[in-house]
Length: 290
Ligand SMILES: NC(=O)c1ccc[n+]([C@@H]2O[C@H](COP(=O)([O-])OP(=O)(O)OC[C@H]3O[C@@H](n4cnc5c(N)ncnc54)[C@H](OP(=O)(O)O)[C@@H]3O)[C@@H](O)[C@H]2O)c1
Image (cartoon, rainbow, N blue to C red; front, top):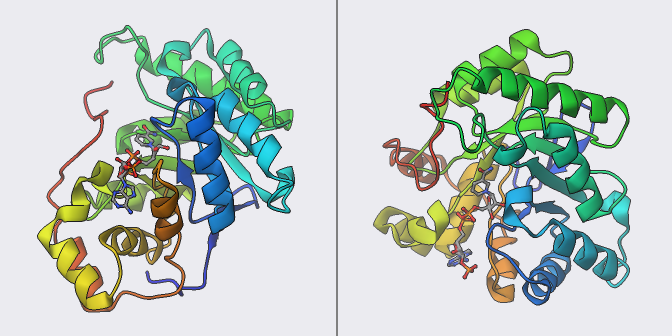
């Protein structure tokens, strides 16, 4: 599937629109750095921000947004905030963890709240309590969703098996699956599962944590398109209708990474990039979590 360059959002199964471009905030820590990045992002047109309890920046992201939205002529309803339940709060502590995210962000509600990881911190990946813990977390998210505190709920780092398990037991289906996705990790099976269940497939580490920017094929495509390697990697994903969350702490790069809605990659360039698929992961791997 190829979408027009002017499309900037996707429709979730909740009926809400989610921007195709969001600012990743992993490793953005300390109020000054968060403020600078959020300021640059709002100026460049970002309206989506991806945080998590484990990033330890929910309070700073929320505070920066409250301070900066008026400066950029925007209000709370104009932006889309994602956060995630930490693996240490999986299961019994899930209500406490989710309420803590809501209070740290302090933005009234969270647009999208994800179970960050299918396992539980401190438990072996093969621990038989893992499935019960994530089911309990999901029930918590469903409850807070019904109360309107979490506008949409979803999961992250789930495998096809975890997705099937969730779909068989849930009352509210997940709106989003956020996983690692870039030309070296095309995730065909997971994308098919998401399509079958009506779940939005979202990409993280679209730049391969910055490492794919120097890949020779990516650099060549960028050169003949007159774009940066980062823009090419991000365009490759959004052109397939897949939302991205590039992280940068550098205001110039934040601005540069947003310029992905004014060009289209040719079919040949799309295929060349997709041809790099080799199952390579730059981030964590949940395939062993039962
Ligand atoms: N759900 C999960 O488990 C999970 C896991 C990983 C990530 N995520 C989310 O996805 C976001 C993005 O993933 P990520 O942080 O792993 O990696 P990424 O976005 O693929 O890459 C970020 C790295 O690329 C560099 N970079 C960004 N733009 C650049 C440009 N135009 N030119 C050169 N270098 C550039 C950044 O450095 P500078 O900061 O110095 O610019 C940073 O080191 C995270 O921040 C987080 O919100 C979620």
